[in-house]
Image (cartoon, rainbow, N blue to C red; front, side, top):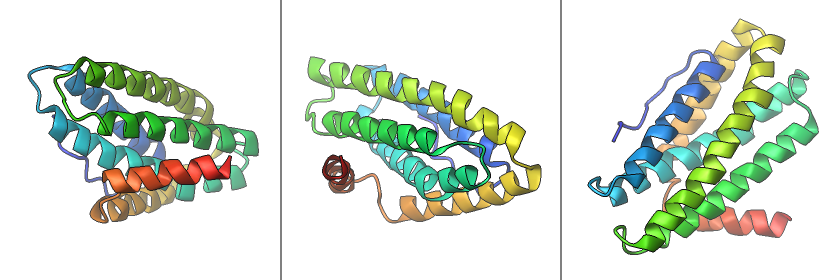
Length: 173
């Protein structure tokens, strides 16, 4: 399992892409019957929640303000985060990591996450590269990394935290 990335900044696009590659590796580990799936899931939950929450609070508003993405793209990305959180919670609630149910829920999380990563890279990160200056992307990278680190320190990936996020998203809709 790759170590949790302790990023301190840099171009926000590169920081987010590094997390995306980390997510893909974590998903591969979750599919491996010889891996410590419980530990991988705990790390994945922590980084995934911190990543999504930091994007929603720091990155999307800044990109929207600079017209790199519009309100619909922000709403769509936030909706996909909520779907991913639901799939994550369903996986976290499976008690036996060697069960068929764990494999099925891993597949559902993988589908939701892979779909979101693809869309975000095309529809959010590409416009960020072309429509936002390097200096702004660097500052945004620092802000994103700091918020992500703060959330990780505060245990954002606990099952209780994920449950609260899922419930809040359901009440919002």
